[in-house]
Image (cartoon, rainbow, N blue to C red):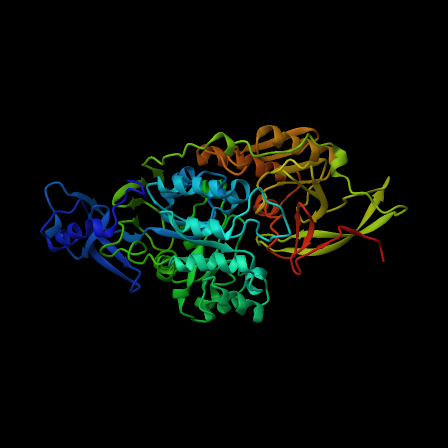
Length: 600
């Protein structure tokens, strides 16, 4: 049963009431389990859950009065009955998978609800792309709620996207059946300065009675932050330290703390609960960005919950942060997030609350996964041809496109360099002295060259700069059409010829990620849908991703999940330095700065 055909509570209220009272028979009864009650933070042994029409009708020490001759019995003796896990903020496109294949990948890990912001595809295909993601999400056997993207471009005037999202688009989407609210409001300077479009988008969302997502990436917790909160965002996931989490909760926001493939922000913020003893109801666990390799090899929200527990969080509090807290935040407390009457019957059976092995997953009353295997179909949307032909480059590129000329007569220059920070989204603004050879500035040591290749409107534009932190050696280049959030093409390399080869390879392939060394492609991940996603199974995409990450290591990179760092180098709403199709951006001031400067 898909989300768009799943009956509402009013549709089945009489059945639920009659089943709970014993006047009708349950479809399924889970017997003898340990009830994890996230409302009261208790574990109650020897309880039954009676399920009718995909919803919970009764929970108690015995559901024998609900049993009929055709009632299915699931034996849970010795195991905990846990609500299905909710991811409060994430981007399906970051998995390099379509919604169907993402769902197939996470169902065995116990994720039964996701709150997704498809702003990646919005930048490439606009409102039509968002609708495609929304429509495929509604086909799935688990709950995928879509947040209408708020910022395409993420920072107007700082980048050029394939399409732009308007306040009128937001108002239209609020009437779609699967839209739960507004996606992360990344233009935090715009909100703090009362930008009319940003306020109009948030007003349309609040007028529809839905939730405004936040993204405040500045360390400034003074008046600018207060102005942002006053503007309407109800949550934020960009915190990186305890003070960030505390400030958000004190101002009435939900602090979303994330563990993604490359973002390790739980340990530094959960101390607000584990050490400061603040009320945990306003803290939510999420992933934000997980690529397919993480999903296949490590897990999804179960991985985040286990990590929170390893960081000292009480298991029941960690589960609250991944279930009822999330549901309450989005106004869905009566639908999901707990094992109580009327709610969708989304249940995990596990033998241990701390290590959280996901043994059985039930969604809407049906067993959807068992011992790591997905048991249900995840239907695909029929993606049109125009969604598969989005790498629009004017021509093949040459090494000359990737050269940075030096001032006349200079033997060396001072360069503004993007500094990658391992396991975090922010970068650092660095300065390096770089040599000049034959009138061209040369990358040297740990400094590599970075280029942004325009790929939406076939302008032929290439912006060049420098980046530090990847540790690449030899003659190599890596190119990707996943380049948050504008999703042009990012190329990082040590050699201009290799950079041209990698870029042209992706142009011919229609999008994806590739690594070249000495004229040979070491690895390629094909992402034909919008240059962002594959509709192949997650295991296949993960295998290609593993090969790609091994190729990065073979080229000298030792960063944890370095690909995620690569893909965020154009995200012009997170400090300090980023690259866009318009130039090098100092996100601290939202100004363009020169790549090279004369030596002092």
